[in-house]
Image 1: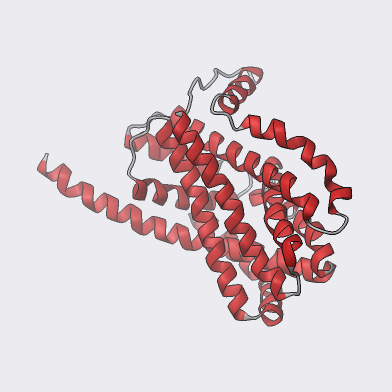
Image 2: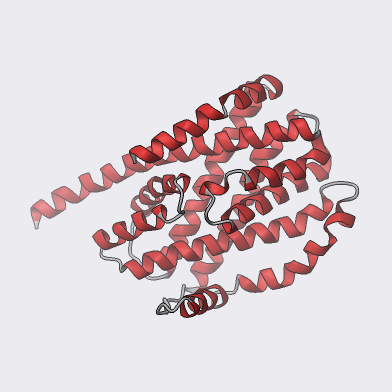
Length: 297
């Protein structure tokens, strides 16, 4: 936890000048509203994980699960990308849920976030500028196979195959259809919220019309998905920013696009830290409720 907070603090301090410049340019109201949308979008990611976890049969309270998820997510800022799932597996052990179930929930969540992000980007980026269809027409070809990937049986089967290829026993777990549907709905809600988080800033810089909406929502979906695919990079650092700059340069210019990408990164770090603090409080309350019950037993 200490290492995570140090890294998060370093990211905020390193990008402070860029954030201050963004506040001066876009105005504190736009930045504040954008931060609220960043918190809402990040919280929606937690709902994907909770839906999948319950669909795998885990009996956990929503507040307790959310608390664990938000605290564990700070681990993504450390190199290796394994810290969140290790923390979740430890939580599962304490709660009586098999570690394989916790591992499957994390992998399924990442797969759903990636798939829905790619679908959102493929569907919207062709409409992000006057020549967007000419530049991004090929993304439309990805829509059908990506949509098929969201079938409840597809992602678990692919994960099992990857484990076999890695000479590891398959997970052999399947998520309930209704839970998978709920997780996918939350996945698309994530991009709507995080896209709105970007849209508030780009509109403050002059972007307008439906193309601005398509660029913000589609660009965030694609950028986040690409950042997850590049596993060794902590929280998609640099990769996600590059995709956003390339997307918004057409909308607001290259310099302003860099300001939006940097401001987004800092606001999302603040959202993660704030939700982790909320997670700590939720965890303490959950433990406080358990103590009287155990004493009575």
